[in-house]
Length: 69
Image (tube, rainbow, N blue to C red; front, top):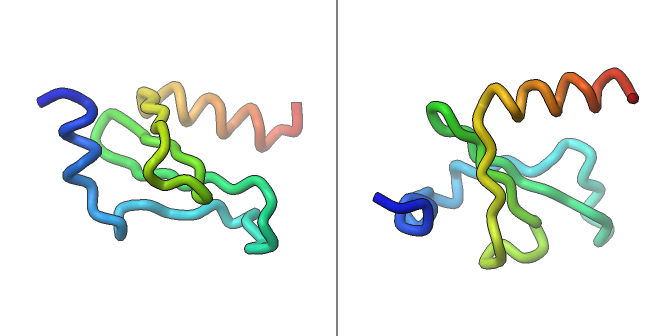
C-alpha cells in the first residue's frame, strides 16, 4: 500500500491538533501517530499535503523543540 492510500484510510479521529492551537487562525498542525511513522498536516488545510516522518525522527524533533533550541 502506498502512502496516499494509507493516508486515505486514516479516520479523522486519528488526527490530534497541537495543544498550542488557539483556534484564532494562527499556525496549527495536526499529527496522526501510527506504528513506525508520524503523519503531520496543516489543520487549516486537511486535504492538503501530509508530511510523514519516522517515529524516531519525530521524537528527536519534539525533544529538540522542547529544549527551546
